[in-house]
Image 1 (tube, rainbow, N blue to C red):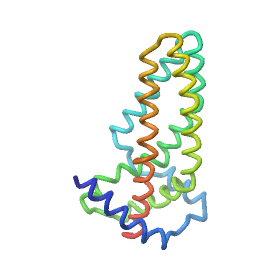
Image 2: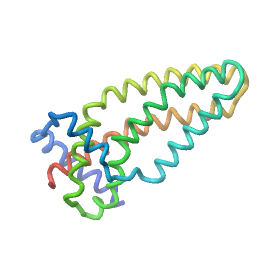
Image 3: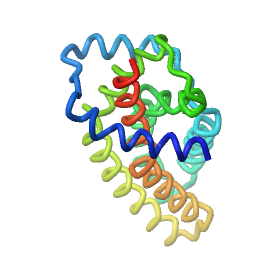
Length: 183
């Protein structure tokens, strides 16, 4: 409940923060903040990413069109997951502290990380479109070759992408906007 209230609060602050938004001019500084991050990806999200990656990797070993399509999907998905784990998901690790009203100076690097996500947001969404396209190919191959578990996996991964687009990315951006106001 506190997280929902925090998200509502973040949304209300976002409009004001948008007016006062300070763009990170130095990508190098943002990159250093991202590389030196002390923020932890929530364990549930980290575990989900690992499971998705491992499952897809297992499907790359299938014979025929399904295995080939899984390999193509993995080529696109792996670098995308790396980006998410670098500058989208770590910010979500701050939610429990923010929900309890704790804002500390050591959270300041999260602003630069959020700015990096804002800069890359459209590219991340474009990558999702490429991923969905490759997943459709995988789903078609799996259907044709009668791999129902792969079809279910593809559907689950498509829902995962929607959750990122509709909830996780916007929340990570709002965390940075909120911290700009507080710090």
